[in-house]
Image (tube, rainbow, N blue to C red):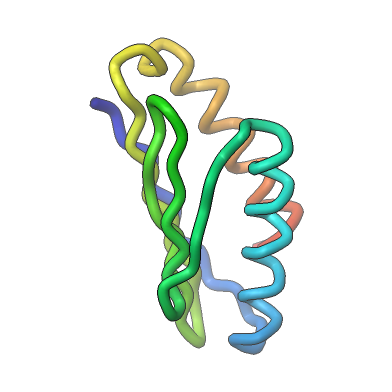
Amino acid sequence: MSDISIRRQHGKTRAAARASAEHMASELKDEFDLDYAWDGDVMKFKRPGVSGELSLDHREVVLNIRLGLLLFALKPSIEREVHKFFDENFPA
């Protein structure tokens, strides 16, 4: 297994941060066929070979992704795409 972790200050209200996370998740669902569900301020997601969670609080957003063995070789490109989505939805 291989992990990708991103932690970023968001500077938004909790509602705005959640809306940005929802937008990001919706795009990822469409592009990568990712299933997700919210449990409070934690969004859990999965698809074959990938699982993880995104958590929000009043200051930051934290994303943890676990890649299965078959996607390990694609980690650099997946990480680039995730950073791109983060930059669009949670600019530094």
